[in-house]
Image 1 (cartoon, rainbow, N blue to C red):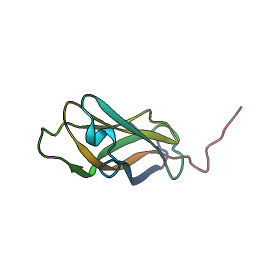
Image 2: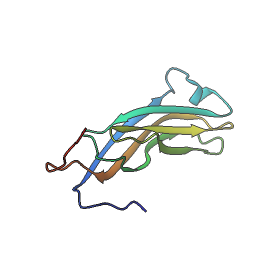
Image 3: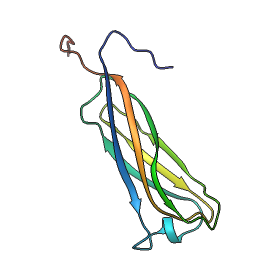
Image 4: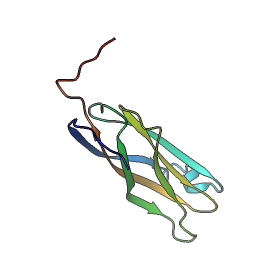
Length: 116
């Protein structure tokens, strides 16, 4: 559980196309075995500490002739952003993926002091 102090809470959200490989024959569409795509996402404003990030598939365009195998997650979360990661394996063929994400956490307050 993430516990917040008395600071204001911020929520940021967005969508990102991670890849579209059907037209150009990329390896998510034509390949086999473990494959991965990463996309750096920046928050519209910085958080006071790394926020909680929830991510999910908003659109997927897949070949249904084999089993659908996929993992989507947020990794390397910082106050400024995170990496959206999509993984598949075996003979799964993915033409394109769009993810939707929501980040929520503490944001800076006007009364915060920075002492160096």
